Each structure stands twice: as structure tokens, then as C-alpha cells.
Image 1 (tube, rainbow, N blue to C red):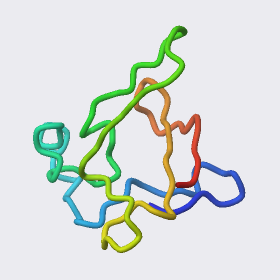
Image 2: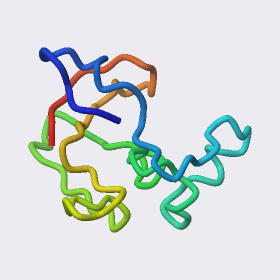
Image 3: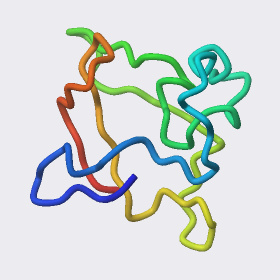
Image 4: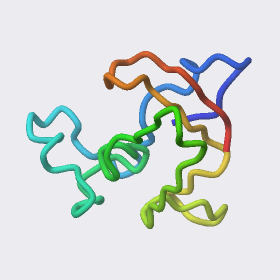
Length: 100
């Protein structure tokens, strides 16, 4: 939702949701997927693209999201925001973060 402050990942707040997608809908996890990205928060990358699978052999991961605008002139741009990586069990634990 916002840039990281003082290197503290929790300062990023929640997923970026400029379209105000109703995440309290009990069907959100089913509706939000790679085939229906507009049913997801713009910032819900795992909802749109699935979990990132890192293992001891993977050094990098390429992720493409056509609904993640970085243009400074776009109303829903992700410029000047942040990215947060949660732990593997999808808990709220934030293991890495950075500003875009």
C-alpha cells in the first residue's frame, strides 16, 4: 500500500487495493486468480500468480503481471510503493521487503 519506512516491513501496510476489491467476501480466495486478475487487489501477487516457489536451487524468479502498472501517470501505479514477501505458510510474517 505504501513505501517502507525505516527498514520496517510492517510499515508497508496491507495489499495495494485502489479498486477497493471486497476482500472480506468469503469467496475472495476463489475469485482472485490468474484468470480473473481484476477480482484481486492490485497488490495481491500471490492471489493472481500463485505462491512463489523458492528452493535451494532457485536463485531468481521471473514474474509477469499485466495488471501491475508502474507508470507514474497511471491512477493505480505501483511507483513509490513497496513489495513484501511473506513466509511460505502464507501467514502474516514478513520475511523481506523493499521499495519500488
